[in-house]
Image (cartoon, rainbow, N blue to C red):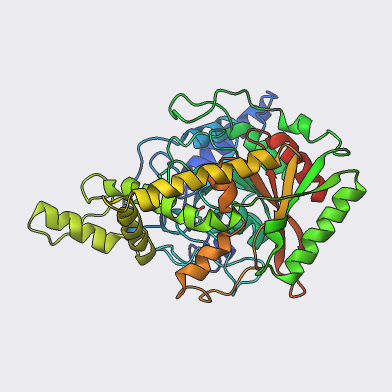
Length: 447
Ligand code: GLN
């Protein structure tokens, strides 16, 4: 299917940037051999899974969607990659994404945009657009994406698949090319809630190689999914249903809430009063951290090196000028500005303070509800090219995603219908820190 429809040849959907054919075939043979011997099979035996190209697979390209990493092949596996393979998964290769995971449409990839398999002239969302499209197109049963400010949940909604943002610290970031380290998270995308929960159960857990990974034991998500949902309190935030929300999306989310009520949930009105500050706060913190993280790409240690330079400093400058795309440069400039002497208190420090207020909003809300449900995106998938000239309107595609990112709580997107034009609509479910179980139960109920 990949050969016929993704087009490493035809460039039709353009979700895979590279295929790890030998590794996949070796793993498939290994699983076959286990089966032939009648040995018990691991939980993901033979499941074809794709990996976003910001995660390291030993010896395979890892471009992060950027020209600056052209030619770089990490000498090790990300922890999540290792865990999937140990669980029997067949890893097919690396998936297209916005450059360094910066974007909401997958149009910022240096290797061309990904197309939405549900409507080829529309974007798949981003930055994990390849991860969502590959599942929606049936190239793999699940994929790994990363979500810093919406990049798993928003493309999942746009492509009509399930995407999970695990609690910060639930899944190891070792082997992830960092964008904004205090926000970056790795999570699964899949065609349904049960598959996504299964993959989450495999990749979650403490990793001594990631100092921010939690030692809390991982819940048994499969067992959680068998629990009834009657009696659970579903919080509905006023602020997520304001101006700018597409009417068909609003109607689909309202229908979902009615369905939950019929299944015995109590619908509770809640308020997240600092929501209007979430997007600006996110874009100060994320760009500040990115400007620092991306300083390592200097033409010496990884990938691309500009050929023409006579001096070292000129080589740094040229490499970064040639290697980074326009959105990445914009963010390095924004972040460097926010961190510079004289502006640090006004921007970066203030944003950190507002981040705390946003997190408190959720802690207070979760005193009166068990999960929060609302729209995932303000609009359905837009057309390729529609927003590329207007970065701010692109940033607003994440209006409902970034608050959960800043607060560190878990979230997920589940398909909940489609527009009159047949475009997918996703509903967002958010849960308490480390309470993926309750979130997944609600996810299964709305599916
Ligand atoms: N769209 C957001 C951004 O461009 C989120 C990206 C992400 O979650 N990686 O920063």
